[in-house]
Image (tube, rainbow, N blue to C red):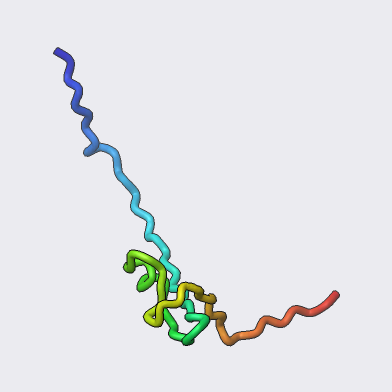
Length: 68
């Protein structure tokens, strides 16, 4: 009979850290700021006021690019 069990003890599995980005969204109607992790926990994407339209909150830093 052939032994079908493979031995994985010899191989090293390398784990890489997963980067998570915390993106904030704001409700278009009431302006409530909600994070991406809070929205993913809910069964449907909806604000506490009942509105379903969100906009991504941008950082307050303004980038300036020099013209050539």
